[in-house]
Length: 277
Image (spheres, rainbow, N blue to C red):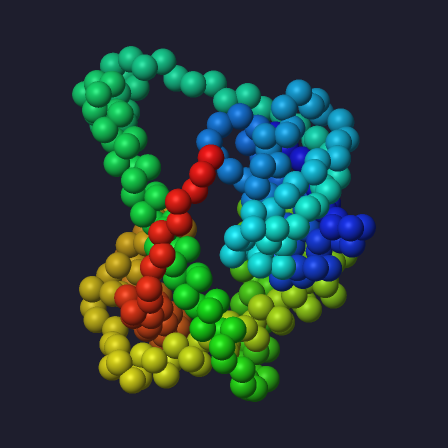
């Protein structure tokens, strides 16, 4: 379902409560799955849209989980989202025949089930690892406080803005919307950039103390992931990194930061919480 939404909590726009997380506040155009297992950005939003038609407007009540690391400011709070439906599309499942099995590189239904099970496990492991990394860095960031260089914050702010605009343009948000919300976007990006720079400086110190280094296989892994994400030829990425020293240094720096976070996660105590349905 294609829709627009705007959320408030006790009458206050969520876009003001979480200016660096505009996807949770106000979006003029996006897609949400109504039926299926894929959870959208707003927890439980899609499940409440069944039966609506293009042009319908509807208020949806959402209560965010008590633990909501994506936007801590929204954790445990109740919100109201004003939703306007723009378009509806229906997913049609293919027939489970020999042609479909061949396209999935399996022999039969049993093979397909095994493949899906392995993929789901891989996704779960990835999300669990990402959650651990996020929780560890957020806990560390909350314990340190020091001034950061304005020049680094300014550079990082531009990077945050660029990433946000690119992601939302892929979701169908028009360019005019960014111009309209320019002030709020900049303020949110600057706040996020300040936190990022602070965390990067901390991670750099950890990497230095633990003598973490970038190896050739780390660069190879980056090229593989980036070429898959951007659908670029790996050889083109290699050529770019070979000729652009600044970009190569940025990649090496990000790899070092990732290794520092992995080191922190390896030293963290992980608690498993049993969720009762």
